[in-house]
Image (cartoon, rainbow, N blue to C red; front, top):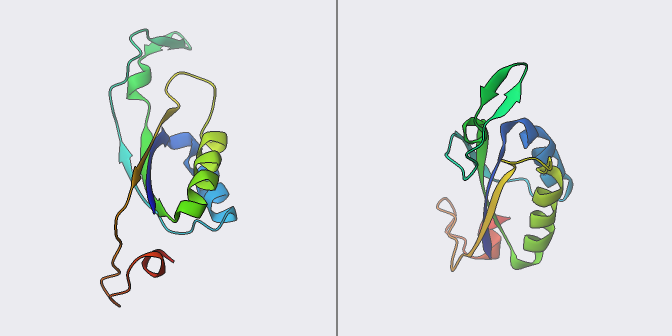
Length: 112
């Protein structure tokens, strides 16, 4: 199993959520976050300079089977992308075990 954590633009969240549902990734958690990035140059929009590190973001946590990991990552890469600085990051780690508290199910059964 893989844990996929993604920091994406808040403006791309609905598109990403829809695309994830289309590939049957129906359960994930998310939070609104703000962070500081590597970009030091501000951007100007309508005469106002703003920092790309202050763009509203969503932090998604998705746990999927190994079979779904590549497909899930591909959806995130395609639908969260704007080709501009500040599109975000994807982090992938291995999950050793999952336990559903209510039923005691473990492994793949617990995440389905």
